[in-house]
Image (cartoon, rainbow, N blue to C red; front, side, top):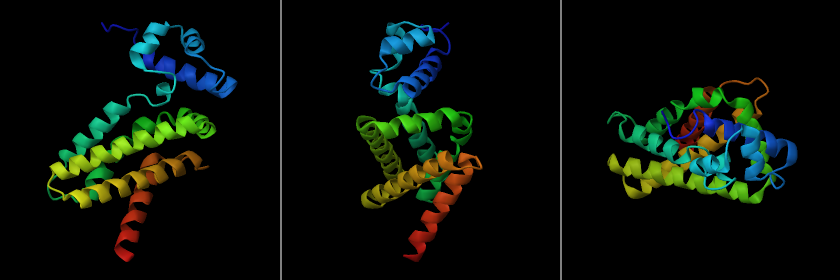
Amino acid sequence: MGRWPTGSQERLQDAAIELFSERGYEHTTVAHITEAAGLTERTFYNHFADKREVLFPDQKRFVAELAEAVRAAPADQSPLDSIAAALLLTTSWFDQRHDAARRRRTILDTRAELRERELAKMAALEEALAGALRERGGAGISAALTAAAAVGAYRLATAAWLADPQRRPLEHHLKVSFEGLRTTAMNW
């Protein structure tokens, strides 16, 4: 049995997104979130450092798992393809949370400090992926450029996924984005 109620992190996230959407980010406190989730503030702080972090759940684990997948990629797989394959492993999880992701995006777009936090998270992802590529034998500048381009393609894919009126899966948008990156790189 875990130390905290099962599903408490998800309950806190769902409550936070709901309240941020209804009341606004600035008018929602941790106390409001925990009350809506039926949990304690202590439980909240066991999962998140502050209310901003509730919008970036499991980011460290996400980054670590992607970097590990890149390190474990077949030796003959290109650096860019190894990152694309790692990201594709995450798509079903995100697709199951499409509505929450869309609402989360709206919340992030309303607050400069949240967009700044997101950029810091993307920079951490980029650095971890570059490190994984270097561990695979990639040169420093090539690893950094590939990781930066891949994270850019990922960001464009998620934006397209969230805005897609046809609600095509994230996998579709990732493939389109990475194919566009490959085409651009080859033809420039």
